[in-house]
Image (tube, rainbow, N blue to C red):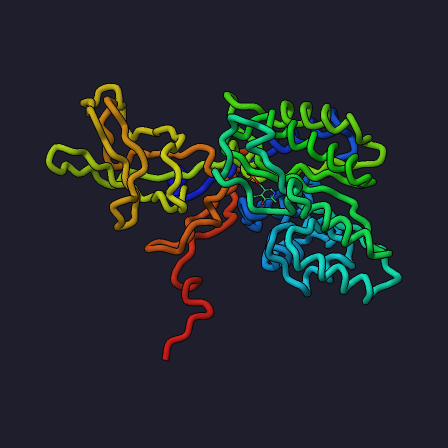
Length: 400
Ligand SMILES: *Cc1c(COP(=O)(O)O)cnc(C)c1O
C-alpha cells in the first residue's frame, strides 16, 4: 500500500487544469480568433505551473522585476511576457521594451522613460499599451467593486490624464500607442462589467483615434465553479462589444486570467489532529492554517469537503464545531460546522478551489511553505514543491 502523503499539502490535478485551459483557449478562438492567453504570475508563481502554462502556449503576465526575471528563468522568451503594474524597474523596462515584451504603462514616470528611450534609440519603433482607469461605479452601478473609492491603477479617463498620456506619447516620433489594458478587478466579477470595459475600449479608441494592435482585457474572471459564469460567457460578451469597432484581423484580444484558471484544479489537504472541549465549545485542531488559504484574512467562506477516517453516519452529532488552524493565533479559525457528525483525529478536511493567492502568498509564519503535488492524468504524483524547512529559511540570513 502507498504511504499516505503527509498533510498539509496542495494538490494540483492536471486533468482539471487542462479542462480550464481548454475552456479559455476555445472561448477565445470561437469568439475572436486572434487572441493571446496570458497568465497572471502573481496569482500563483509555482515554478512547475509557470513552465506547464508556457508549454500550453501561455504568455507570462508579470508585475514586478522579480516576476519578469522568474518568467525568463522558466523559459518565457521576452516577447512572450506582458509587463504590467505601477511599479516597474527601469533596467528591466528598457530591456523588455527592446526585446519585444508587451508593456502596459501605468504610472507617470513611465512616460518620462519613454521620452528618454525614444531619444536614446531614434531608429527603433516602440509600441506600448496604456492601462485605463475608468469610473466602473458609474459604468456599472450596483456592482461590488474591489474598493469603494474606485480603482487606483492606470491613467484616469474622466479627468483627462489618459488623454494627456496619449498626447505625450504621440509627440514622440518613434512611439505608438498600440494597446489598451483594461484589467479592473471587481468582487462581483460579472459578465456585465467586462461588457462595460470592452465598450470603454471602443469609446477610447474612437475618441482618440487609436489604431490598436491589441486590447488586453486583463483578468478577474470567475472560474472553476459551475454556479458562476465562465470564459464562454465572458468572451462572448467582450467580443460582441469589441466588434463594434475592432476587427480580429487587426487587433488581438489578450486575456490574463489568474485565479479562474487554476481554482478548479487545486485543493489544500489537511488532517484533524485533536478535538478540544472548552467550556462546552468544540474546537477542531487541524494541521493546515488560515494563513495557508487566506493570508490576508479577508475571507469567511472556505469551500471544502471531508474525507472521514471512519463511518461518519454512526457518529454522534455536534451542534457546533469550529475548525481551527495550525498557528498559535486566536484568529486562525476557518469555519464553523453546525449540526453535523463529530470530527475525530485522522479525518481529512480538503479545501477546494485553493489555487489562487494561496501557495505563494503564504507567509513564512510559524510554519513554512507546504508541499505541492501534481496529480497527473494517469493518477501518478509529482512533487512540484517539497515543504520548506529551516534549510531554506536560513538562506541569506546571517548571525554575528
Ligand atoms: C492580478 C492581475 C490579474 C489576474 O487577476 P485574477 O483575478 O487572478 O484573474 C491580471 N492582470 C493584472 C494586471 C493583475 O494585476
